[in-house]
Picture (cartoon, rainbow, N blue to C red):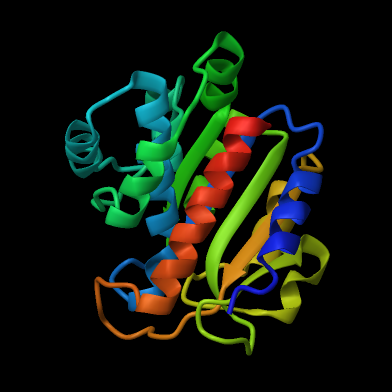
Length: 231
């Protein structure tokens, strides 16, 4: 299912070369089964980032994430002048990722703190267009988009799609096509943009990810966090 994982890792490394600041936007509806994988990835990355920055207790972090339900609309940007994470989900740290965090051996130095503070994590839900103004205000050099994508692959398969070929895949539930979203963002600036799609299995009304998609999502979380720590 994940035979291309090494290539995905290499492609992300190549993409992050010369990255000055990174924004990761998770997209999807977290009450429609695997369509919630984008918000799930953001939630897990937020917890890991908070852990490294604040050396926090995992239970405290999970409670903070659960309590951090913010109304994020373009007309509220003044509230987010120093924002690093915008996470509207309520997912605690997954057990699989708990073992990962216990194995982390991170030198929390000034350079790493600066890098993490310039890594923005946004749960765009099913209306990512609501966050275009905020993205422009944060003005990252690189943007990674994550969404459930119908690519005619096995459930849980991860694929990287070039922004110029994004029209060739079917995006799940959100109202604005990602191709249009990208074009709108790039009206003022040519952002470096990478799209990561995961093939869904279940898109019915459900708060749970399917087993295959959850496994792939956890692997992607660990991979992305390793890259975030290194760029």
